[in-house]
Length: 434
Image 1 (cartoon, rainbow, N blue to C red):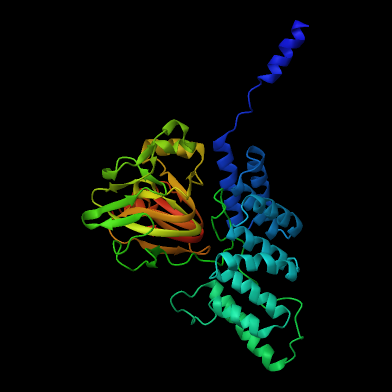
Image 2: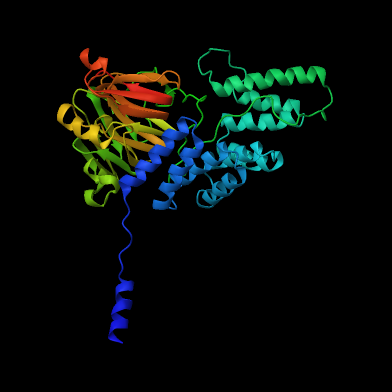
């Protein structure tokens, strides 16, 4: 009898199986790399392994649903997306994904509802306008189609500022509508399939709002600075809780909650409350960041650099921690593991060159303050044109790009560049000379 009770006690106190966060990130990032390369079946296997370690991780589930979409498994992709929407009911990327999945499955009427909800939450969502325009085109509603194509950017001139794949697709569709209205005056004359296909699905993380374009055709839009184009002066306008000050200072209002890099706070007013618990922070980020909230304002500065503000609108940005000043707490933050280096080369790297830079992946909607010597340059990365650049120059990157730390034998190192990063995929890199 005593033995039975002992056995029950052992079962009751059996520890939870160990969660290997490094292994989880390995499978997640491998899956993303394979998805960028278009190897969707391999990507699916990697995401399934990551899902086995974290069954309810939203980023894994979203990535898996996108992979299923590309594999043509629309029913499974729809089910997974609807499950995520149950927890993130007003997520614009999820609603758009659902609409596009239903559209590609030929269920135009079902697709309209989530796409119209997208426009209710984000009236300027160009990909939703483009897809709704294609639906209207398919049923022969030419005027409605043209209205959506116009809002998607069809009137932008080829090569003009702001021209991108969404605008080019909308232009092609609008041109076809003009031909159709000339040769098919009947509003009931529809087509079984669109002339052009809409842009790919979006991605998110636990914020429910992160957007990453998964197809190779889509470039990220121009970086935003204080609501203006990135060419505006870096300290020109406040953004969110951040207000640049002369002399390289940044004023940070703590009312809605912010996370600040350690070691850069030089002053404060009011009584902001620090949420300082490094050991409890995920991924060990508490060593790098501290949370601050409450009634007060912080003054931060990074000697030799000035603040540069960027708005994230349901998207992601991976930032070098030494270039990060602060960001709104509404953004999710996690460590972004570098890709492409094996354990053997990593061990060799520690003896011959600086350690692999750790990037912090910010996801969702909110404002970010970066530290730069001047306004950073933006370099677009295409699948056919990877970018190799000195690691010390990289401020941040976004889109579906994969960074890899190159060996010292890279020719750039002999020219004084030092350790170099190679970015492959589709997206952009922000770089600064400091």
